[in-house]
Image (cartoon, rainbow, N blue to C red; front, side, top):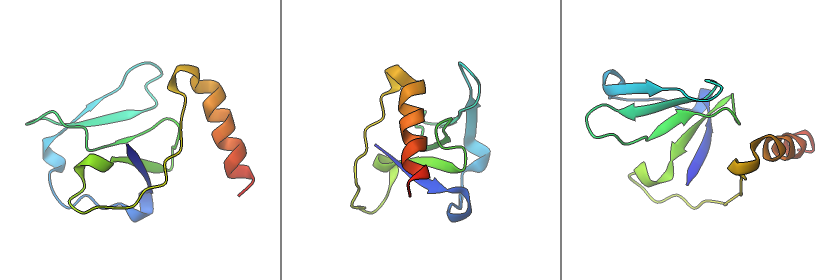
Length: 89
């Protein structure tokens, strides 16, 4: 589960030097992994270019979440639906 956090609302307090970046496919998403343990705690998703996607399992405190589905198999259609929803907000 991922939490979308706008860039302006996100601060990495430590560990930046331990991050390793990996890109695949279009190269638009920047997957950041801990070079020591391999966990992907957050990344720059292609679907949300103005936000970080934070891995909810990496949070120290419980956060109540609203779950929204995203069909990664049909990425282009899912992204179009996501953009339609943002336009209506």
